[in-house]
Amino acid sequence: MKKLIQEAIKAREKSYCPYSHFAVGAALETKEGKIYGGCNIENASFTPTNCAERTAFFKAVSEGENAFRRIAIVGGKREGNLEKTAPCGVCLQVMQEFCDPEEFEIILATDMDQYERLHLRDLLPYGFELEKGN
Image 1 (cartoon, rainbow, N blue to C red):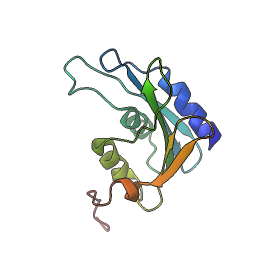
Image 2 (cartoon, rainbow, N blue to C red):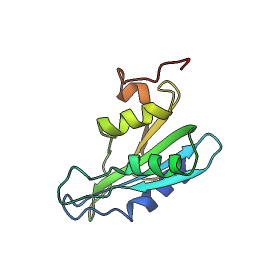
Image 3 (cartoon, helix red, strand yellow):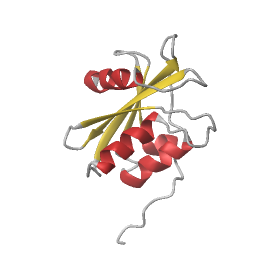
Image 4 (tube, rainbow, N blue to C red):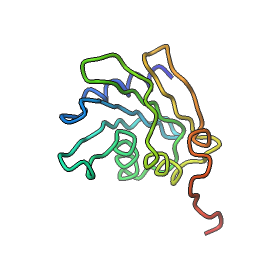
């Protein structure tokens, strides 16, 4: 758990957030234990902005991964303390595309020892799911 949070903190350092100054890092762990980091990447027109969680997922999927165990997320003002930072609805729906909502774990951390563990179903109880058997 601490390694995953540490990797999320490291990914946060790469955040490009000149508009909100709210830096977010994520570390996504595959079922095999490989970790993919992601940071938020803002854009002046806002719509093309990409969250840290989606950056990590898209990086992993583009490398051929599609089975995930958990993700750690850290965030906060660039020059401030970490705050509990939950994924947005779009990120939750991307997670649902690739993860079992009852099993996939989301860790919201404010430091190495302070974190909350949730499951995807807790944060997205009515998400769109891939139809089984197709």
